[in-house]
Length: 67
Image (cartoon, rainbow, N blue to C red):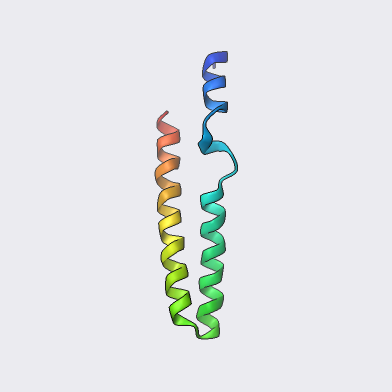
């Protein structure tokens, strides 16, 4: 890998922490806990948010692999 390619990969904002996946896991755990507690509305909304965040993460992951 050349120095220019290494600098380009290091400057990608997609590699700075993995926030989408972290929040997806947080909302998934929230949905599971809300489901066990009987709050089906909160569980459904949390699951929907987690699903959207996982899809965004996967799209950004594929884009970062192609770059």
